[in-house]
Image 1: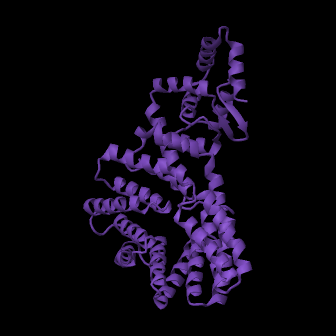
Image 2 (image 1 turned 180 degrees about the vertical axis):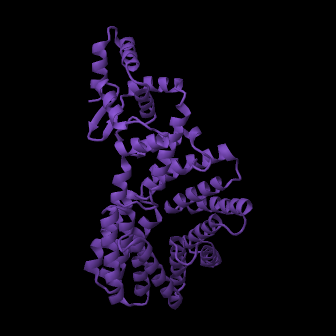
Image 3 (image 1 turned 135 degrees about the vertical axis):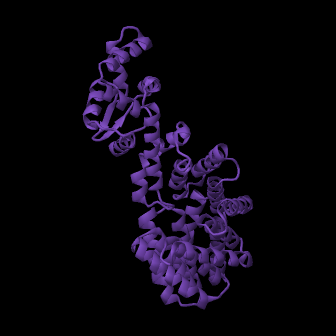
Length: 430
């Protein structure tokens, strides 16, 4: 137990809290300089388990040249650190407070803080937009420490890295459909960027885009639109008309218009974003695949099926080549292609794709993910079109239950799923 650390120090002490500080000081003075430096590095982490890989990374970015494991052992023996399990450590809150005081006296304090922040940025960059269950498990222990870099040590993040801890934290939650937990990180990213750079900077544009994207996922379309428009204006002003951030801003604004059924507004933005991405990134890139998929969605909604199908197929093939056969984006492409076949009443072509997409989404993201609800709803819609009402109803019920729990009763998806279920029941009674 972490309390054992204080208990051991209190054994060395004589008069309560001041005695603990005195015992700490005795132990501190007995340490070699390298062990003291490591203790100070450990004080930068949050009051949460610290995995060895994260400590090793922070030490590496801090230009550590000593035997890390040996000095960790010394700190454990001196009751300044607890080894919770093999290669997992934690510092007691009182000890961390004392160590942070020592950190400020250390000549290398800024170097350690910058190294810690660089290690956290590396973690953040590894968190994808839609993390799988495996990726969530890999990132979970780092999340509280990522929060520490974003807030307490923000001043030691370089200009290029400033918003990355916020981006990683928001992706971690948003990718799981935990929008309420993602929101403060999106908001703080925008606030931090504006504070450091002013209102007209690419990092501000990126933060506006990301916050607008979260609003769109929540169905808050009127809140999202002015942010997307502002982000696009900043990107064009600061980076010129031909830049990847401009292409993303065009694509994102088009996504919003598509979500609102404003197809005539979305189409020219999608086409411009796709063309720009091909020019900037080449024909074989995940963002190109995303643009192909989005334009196909639009054509499908306009019943331009012969225009949509080759784009869907190209996007699916590209995603499989770049990501492998098992990935959330591949599941989305399968689902969308199935939707096209359903619209064309090619039910025998649609069903296996819907089933594959649902199974893949459940496997990768878990049974209660909002994307699972979408897959369930879509497969149910196929069965409803075939008048297979007994097959459709339990899927609609499951989709609605997930949406109500994860998205809330008034989210656009929840309302759609509820209406679909009610319509199915009316059809069964008629």
